[in-house]
Image (cartoon, rainbow, N blue to C red):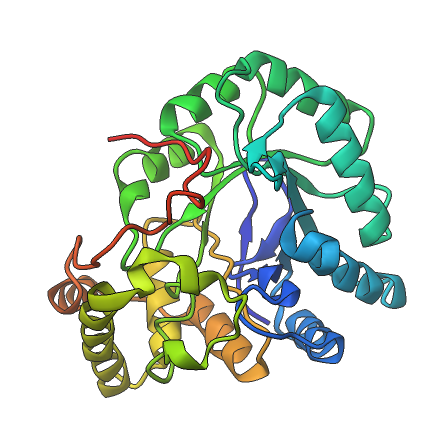
Length: 329
């Protein structure tokens, strides 16, 4: 079993590496239900217990698959997190109103076969709505026993400060990896100070830091990465060359590239709980192995020399994907 970390100051103990279940919905290629069930079975054995999903992943497919497994495994060890607040449209937008969040949560609970989720995130903050109104809704859901804790995704440190002044925030999740490092500019430290877990998603660069070079021509037509600037044209050619150097470096050190990248993402303290996603058992094993890998100051310096901050070319989101992500610094 992998080591555990606490999800927020007063939250449950969870595996130090969790599982992002967006991959169950086909965002990075097909994921048959049986393969997802095998991932969940093995996660339980390894101690990978933090399960992260959202209502929009595959239009509820991710939650439905996870819910089917939960129904068949009533004694499961998992801590279940889901998200709401994105309106897929068209046009794409955000809705953090009390009515929308409640309706979305009840729909998620139905698909998950649960009466309560351990953590409920605002997937994207609605900029025009005061944070006090959003927190009032979330606190009410918690008081009613529908959620165990409150979370936010892709917010700025200032929003976390404002929210945490009203009620403890259990977790903030944002993209954080060797090629996406903005959370180092305030968010990771704010989470530590406020007793909030920081949950890096996509710590292996949306699959780009893997065992093999990612071939864009082989991706399924609906793959999320096809619309992402970092995976396009000359940006990708430069990025893949840099990542190939890291892949060689990791192997020379005796580690799978994903294992080393995830361990790097955990280096700021015990409040860091990454949630790499996968639908492949071999990758799950590599991801979980990061929980037991300690990196020395020398290791970190060597990694920085291979992939220095700012090496990535291209924006981490397309204009559509950027919608309602809070910017800072």
